[in-house]
Image 1 (cartoon, one colour):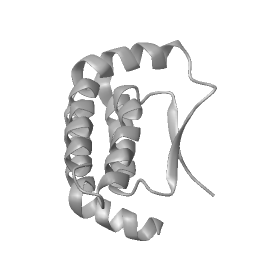
Image 2 (tube, one colour):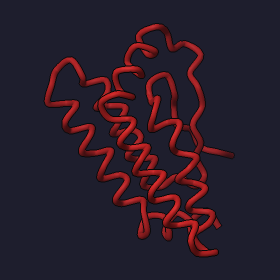
Image 3 (cartoon, rainbow, N blue to C red):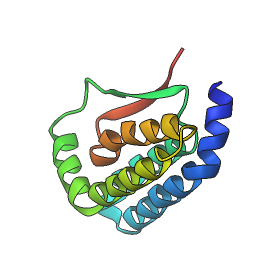
Image 4 (tube, rainbow, N blue to C red):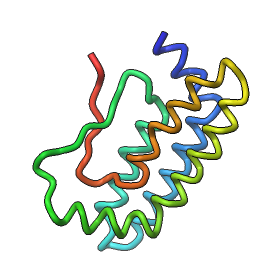
Length: 124
């Protein structure tokens, strides 16, 4: 079932959301000081391509740097990426088949807003 949902997700919204995260990552990597944001963005782009069967967990060793970085990320990229998730999630929830995909889009909003101090792990 995860494979089927991931394939449908990839076609309907995953590719475009991953493209948005990749664009944000490239922009962040152009400036040397924002390379950690770029790496986080690339990690989330991978998650946006294939989200079913994986989840986001908080890292316990994340410190004040993650908090400061998340605030900067929220202002410059996170807000816009979260808007993309909301719009895509609403559009997917219009149909019955798209409801699980829309819910998955809504579940990605917290990591798109505050990506630092979190990691993506496989669900057993």
